[in-house]
Image 1 (cartoon, helix red, strand yellow):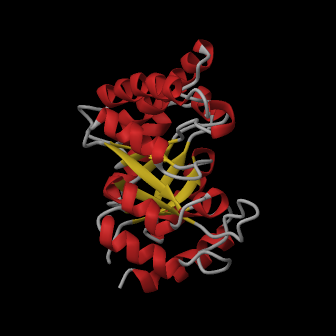
Image 2: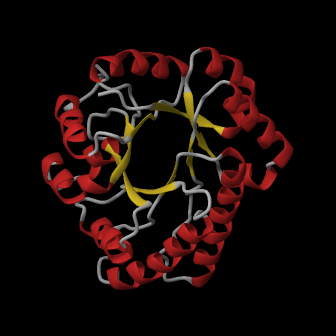
Length: 256
């Protein structure tokens, strides 16, 4: 496999680290928090976009997610969510990411008996996002967070049935919350996978360790990716420079 590899970089760290990113040929997955979105300067975003383009580097986005929920039954939360999503899409017009990853906002403890309401509001939200990105052509990827099994995400993808609404499979989150095996997850959602978030843990906390340093079976993971999503983006979600360096070395054997 020769999938394109991206690496998690918060936007506030991007400009200062551009020389390293460019020299090491690292395509960034740029994370935008809410506070970051409120302070974005379009000219600065444009300058970064220009430098990445000159270097021949692509990017993806990870949208703001804290306390946001496109499927919330509370109107004010939905409005705040779409405001943040709109800010992310404004930045996308400048940086032109291959993929934008969003969180779905679902968990069974809040919506177990109101899944239909969450789904209905979610459909409206994602159709608006797809409309905003139609000219750009960016893939919109919804990530598994607290999902124990894939039925809610599958219902969302099948209800909208749009070629640019895809799945970001986060293997670390799967390991924390799953009640179904990885093979079953891919059997249900593998055809929707456009990106994977790659990090490791022991099933107790979201450690974001480099792949191969904890308990996840990455041999199985990459074989399933090759079978179901051979062209998907691979994003290393390391939260420090040392972990990123180790992950970049570890992932190489799966790219051959």
